[in-house]
Amino acid sequence: MLYPERAIAMFRKASQLEIPRVEILTNGVWGKDKAEVEKLAKKLKGAGLNILGISVDAFHLQYIPLDYPRNAAEASIKAGIENVAWNVAVIESLDALNEYDAKTNQILKTLQPVGIEAHIHKVVCVGRATQTLREYFQQTSLEGPCEGEPPIGNALVSPESICIEPSG
Image (cartoon, rainbow, N blue to C red):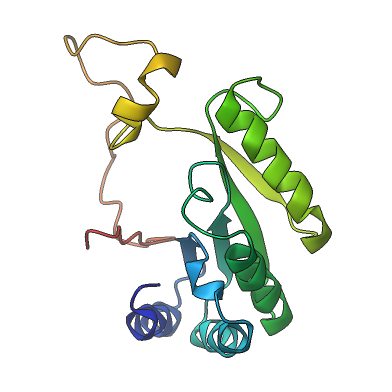
């Protein structure tokens, strides 16, 4: 959403290609100005965006005022985007006693009046988290095989979604 016109162009293209899930995950910083966010939410909806995840947790909101994601969510709901939800990262759980999860729990309580679902995910220990959250994670060996299933067949024949990371 640093480049909303590019995002809108990608959403339009996805809709033209009849990709059923047109989704974005954002920190909601584009909700700074209430009048502007309503215009932008209408454009996003018109371009085909149908799933919007807004990150709200102790990690994101130490940099972003709570009103920004709240404004983005409310404007998106008003614009008719079908599926608007909070995307929440926790170290353990919302009931955990560590400072981050306790703060995230409080944030969600404050946002309850918006009336949208919260999707809770555990923090993935990458980037800054490898240093700042080191005490909360067990170190694992880099030796041995990769975990998880490899992609099978041609996964791009009929994609259900395409993810474009901030790095492009």
